[in-house]
Length: 65
Image (cartoon, rainbow, N blue to C red; front, side):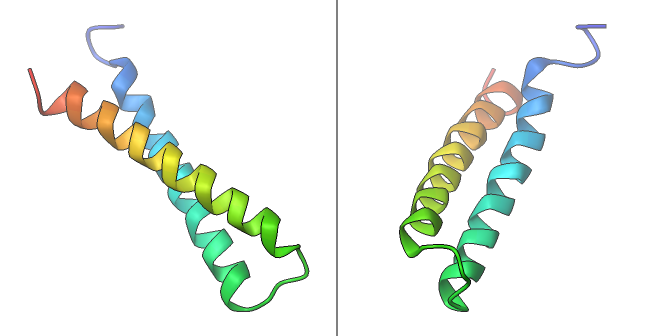
C-alpha cells in the first residue's frame, strides 16, 4: 500500500485545512466577527506557517526527486 499512497499525499489535505484556517481568519478580521482579534491573528499565523510547511513537503515529495 505504501507504493500507491505516499505520506506526501496526505500533506495535500493538510494544506487544504491550513488554507481554510487562513480564509476563516481573514474573513473574521475583515467583518469584525465576535472572536477577539488576537485569536484571529494567531489562527492566521498558524495557517500561513502550516500552509508553507505543507506546500514545501508536497513540492519536495512530488516534484523534486
